[in-house]
Image (cartoon, rainbow, N blue to C red; front, side):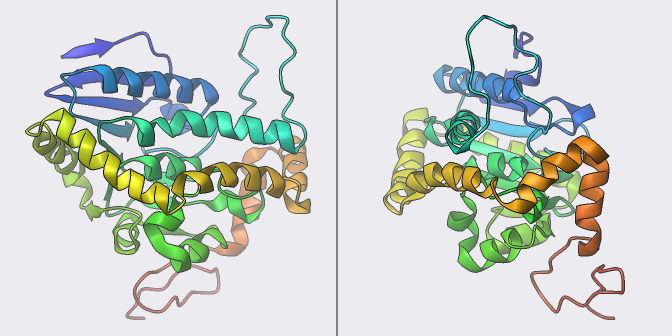
Length: 302
């Protein structure tokens, strides 16, 4: 087993013809900072270059996959090198910053070897962006998957939802910020399948075992022709447009207000107040969405 111990925000290991890249900020619920994503990108290219690796497993440490993008300033920890950097103010600088984040994640699409997202716990907001760039998503039945920040902060800075879930379920979830279980995520195409939580790791590792039986050049050929087909359907063009669309959405009144609220009320209270009217924030794929007075889904039989 090879181990990379130089990363600060991720874990990287190679074992039995697979690389495992683990988001490793459990105290921050694996929030996606720029530092984490730059390490993530470097690890992916390392795995793609390593001829012993046939596939890459993406997973999260702690209680969930990822709670989304880190809302803390991403440049605050960088040393002052005397260079005037983009401030993030204005649509152009905002778009540039969003594209920087997306470029790191888009390596999952561009690399030659297949990737598997192993989803447990919460996979929210930016966590869904990361998962949907993977070639295959396998989720625990009880995972929680959605994009709540779209209620008041902007639009998805990448938009693979449409290509996996179709237009109607994409609109249903992104227009409300509601979430679905891992089981329902598999029903609408966000995930290839879901399994009981106790079988999640073995399911993912079992698929990696099967990839290990196939020549890496053939894995690349068969991954890349599918991705090329999606590119012919506009997939990569839409990702570039999505970053610009998100930057434009950040100018909406609600989006401008939310960052003021973060400063005056704190992130936790602001998010709690935003989500309170949505009850449990869950959508149901099969059967009626009947809710109690607090907006929580009732069991189908009630």
